[in-house]
Image 1 (cartoon, one colour):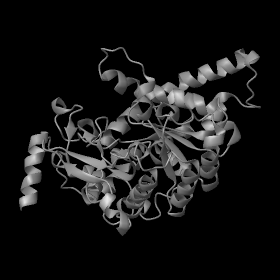
Image 2 (cartoon, rainbow, N blue to C red; image 1 turned 90 degrees about the horizontal axis):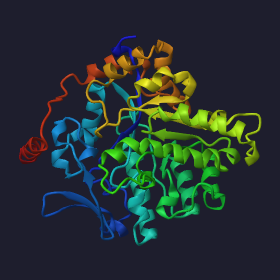
Image 3 (cartoon, helix red, strand yellow; image 1 turned 30 degrees about the vertical axis):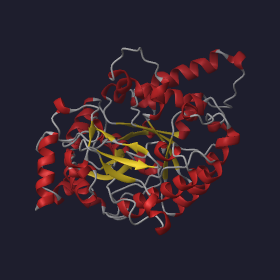
Image 4 (spheres, helix red, strand yellow; image 1 turned 45 degrees about the vertical axis):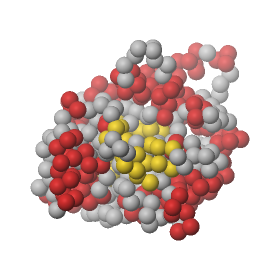
Amino acid sequence: MQAEDLILVSIDDHVIEPRDMFDRHVPARWKDEAPKSVMGDDGIESWVFQGVASGSSGLNAVVTWPKEEWGMDPSTYSEMRPGAYDIHERVRDMNHNGILSSMCFPSFAGFNARFFYEAKDHDLALIMLKAYNDWHIDEWCTAYPGRFIPLGIAPVWDPNELADEIRRLSSKGCKAVTMPELPHLMGLPSYHDMDYWGPFFQTVCDEQVVMCLHIGQGFSAIQSAPAAPIDNLIILATQVSAIAAQDLLWGPAFHQYPDLKVAWSEAGIGWIPFYLNRCDRHYTNQRWLDHDFGDKLPSDIFRDHSLACFVTDPTALKVRHDIGMDIIAWECDFPHSDSIFPGAPEYILDEMQQAGCSDAEMNQITWQNTCRFFDIDPFRDIPREQASVGALRALSPDVDTTIRSRHEWRRLYESRQSA
């Protein structure tokens, strides 16, 4: 297979929400109370709601910045590549990178809807959360049919409202919702508590909505040394997924809800073979603990429920059959610091070929597993012959991928604004 023949569906990218996102989706009586992007005296913008601010760190949108400028300092729209927040430029960037379809996780709202969960007025927060979902589905995702996989955020603070919003999302064609990895770290019940989470699990099963667990919310599970660098969180974040998997696999969720589907977003796949080997060994060896997985091993149950997503994982691809070829999916992570842009097709093709993947296995990894798991027809709106890397790149041959400092991006932004 050649790079231009690949079909790439990225199951984890990110959107930097545009300033006007709430304008058309909040009922008139509450418009003045909607979250707003506010410019500070330091020239940095933050989203503010009920007196609480949430900004965007530099690592959230560093594509085409020089790596020397990456860091946790706050960033603003004027310093970012427009494809981070502008839907039209995003699709051009996707074309240039050969990406057919993308699932975009939130930024200021948080993967676990933290921005709204921490609001003082949860009734008002629910209105704004629904407006967020309406913008994401009705505006961002429908602007270019076939190019995006809708992903909702959820009111995790109220089990009944949570189930209702899942049903509403499903009625709008949304097949995925992002949830906290470890809700007990937020002060919520853990996923072992079926009185609290049971209605959610039942609803996502009934509506065939995938539960996406993106790394990041569970950072506080990593008790680093006081002087430890930020590298600890960035490198070890994927290990939190194993903790989350433990709560679902060895708790009641995977047993009581056989139709529950979980996507392990940006977690990589390298942790899985060790984790599953350890689970099976423990289960068969420590029978005194009286766990009952029926006629299956824990690894079988995990695979029945899971889709495992990676950006780059060359060693793990060599043991792909131990992981399970049916549960591996690829992601680009645009525009975060781990993203591969431009040149994702060449990068992932080389990685898969180095691991000895066949053409059929490559197709499984780059689009088939994802589309099956989320029940998506990737060619409903775009014929297959127009969906390949080569065909998409032909649509946007003039995309500029020049590396520019954040200050150069700011000057370019200001010149466009004044034109």
